[in-house]
Image (cartoon, rainbow, N blue to C red; front, top):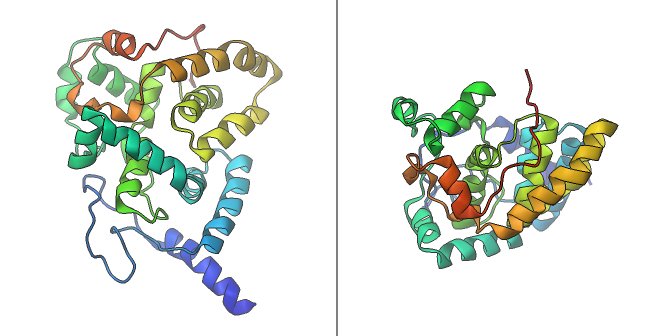
Length: 265
């Protein structure tokens, strides 16, 4: 039994001990040692994945700001869904180009000076405004580690790195209410089990007033927009910085929120 437990817990120890890699390095299929499919890959058995999923789900529900546990949950439960998302990207010209070129969104790949020089209302300027106002950094996104496919690992990484872009598109802040609204949009758009769990159980932490607003106004709006919009992973955002945010919303059939959601002070 002790030997079994050591084997099960070994991937989690490796996960906690490894530093995060540079975020400007594209994920590519190559040899990185025995059983490793990409630099940060941690091979796991189905049993290990199941235990990691159960443990990370409990921690993520207890503390939604444990982004490391949310990341583990997404990777250990999302394999089938990632294949569907990958196939959607392959069928779309812009999505296929993203899969081929593997762009990364990080402070080392963003030209902040260029983004600041863009016109008011452009995607790049509004994205940078979001980062500044809410003191968010794209470098906080955890690297993919438990996905046993180099290509699917990139799809997961891309999903994480465009998360803040969705906040910008939807006009949502980074407080719990805003995050839940974005998770409802992501749950419908991607079908990732982690997004669905976050969307369903995240509202437990809301006040009665915010819960009423969420259920009556914001969830219907997020679901409707997610169903109507094309797959947001197929957008090469880095080549659309100069596009007016309003025009991009119109292209995606994303409407204005039914109310203003106040962000953290």
